[in-house]
Length: 432
Ligand SMILES: Cc1cc2nc3c(=O)[nH]c(=O)nc-3n(C[C@H](O)[C@H](O)[C@H](O)COP(=O)(O)OP(=O)(O)OC[C@H]3O[C@@H](n4cnc5c(N)ncnc54)[C@H](O)[C@@H]3O)c2cc1C
Image (tube, rainbow, N blue to C red; front, side, top):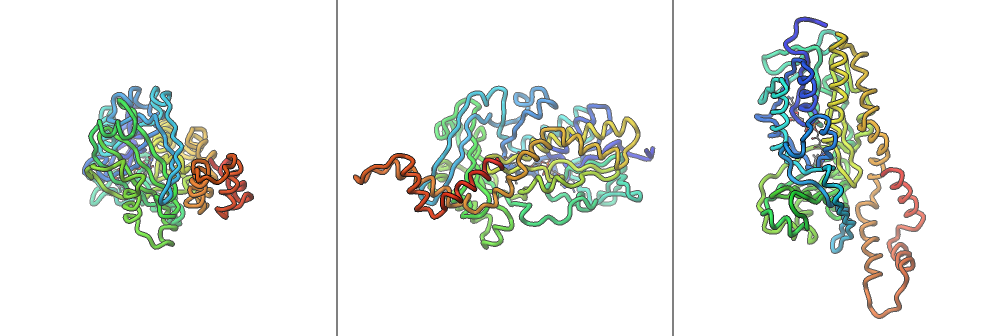
């Protein structure tokens, strides 16, 4: 390794991935700089906000009690939404509260806290600096360029998010096909704490997460979400880019349609808009993460590496960002200790990742993106479910039928067909 370096490691991007990686390496005694283009960490970031936070127990022992988290999610609602009806599966479980399984977060509060932990561990945090390119010595990445400045390090960790131009610059990610990406549009709406507790039937610091499919996206592949924070709700839609374009709809109009829906509008009535934003997200994480995620002197983590999982039931990116950051930190620390930061040494990151829950979950849910391409998910099945319940609860003086008869009648009327239903059911069982 060259002695002509400013730091052992340069980490680019103070999101979840970059901060967790910088923290781990600084805590292990390495000289680390964490560079963030935003005027402060979190100022440029947007996430739906449910963080499956167990992974952070490895990093910050009292994460949930010391970090600025919003609510512990103990109620999960899966909602099939139609224009004039909805069917909800509503799952509440006290066991999800302790130890906290998932918490809601607002990145404008969480990311500065994470960066603060990095500083306390000994990392230098540099906000307001945009990295413009990689410095190379032949094949090897030896540092970064930011405006007129050049910084050199043994290893560069790219944690610069879904648009990672560093990944493209290094030739790891080509221009993604639109079906690999989705656009998220989100509002944060202030509501008084007692209103949230009454409306969403939660108490104390417990919260609810809605995953919505169907009319929320006006038929576009994707879904809606609504998560409770302490004194606000995060609500929005995630829309697959190719389908959105094919249907000629605008993402902000779809977002407004969702918020005005008769099933959603009463939940946010009287609220005050605090934030509104949109951000790209990854739709086919398993395909993107299958690529080689290292080059000599360079490692990709988090969204920069394509590590997001959308199963329709859950959107996960922050926990995978943290998991990949831990795997990268282990690899980089081992490389620094042997003085070998070659492509081969850093290639051990792939094995670390495969061994971790990140690799395991990407394998388990590898079929989910394909399954979510099924257009029947975004219309037919919501209506079919409502029709089954309509058959059960409507008493119009005609002779009643047993549940199976009512369900078969609804399937027949839907035009989906029993064979198709069985095939889709099997595909769902294998994908989810
Ligand atoms: C609408 C929406 C809803 C979502 N909902 C959820 C959810 O509920 N749960 C979940 O777990 N995940 C969710 N995700 C995904 C999640 O937000 C991401 O997977 C996660 O933020 C990835 O973290 P990261 O650290 O890799 O990247 P990011 O959080 O994007 O951080 C990248 C950082 O790099 C900085 N940066 C970029 N370029 C440069 C540069 N050139 N120089 C310096 N700094 C740079 C950025 O400013 C940013 O701070 C959602 C995403 C969207 C869009």
